[in-house]
Length: 122
Image (cartoon, rainbow, N blue to C red):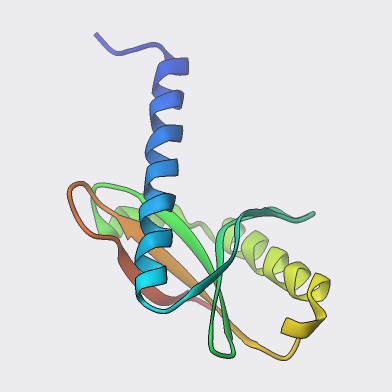
């Protein structure tokens, strides 16, 4: 028997928080500085905004069984929202205005280290 929808949602939420936490640790080990987590702008939300050198990365975290599923989970509509939200973030932080930016995906699979997909879409 399947658990009720509210329990499934709660489990998915907790799985997402865990994936974000592991992703942040992994990024820090790679030399990234975390500027924001769960950043909300008028157009949407970005899971992680990180900086490395003169690069700002908007990172979408997906906890999925497979990499293909994670890539497919970021729809073109979501990509546009993330793009607008990152541009808004940069406008709110003038010192970051001249930094390059890209859009990454962090896939967190079961019993695996996070996999960082650089420049997942443009």
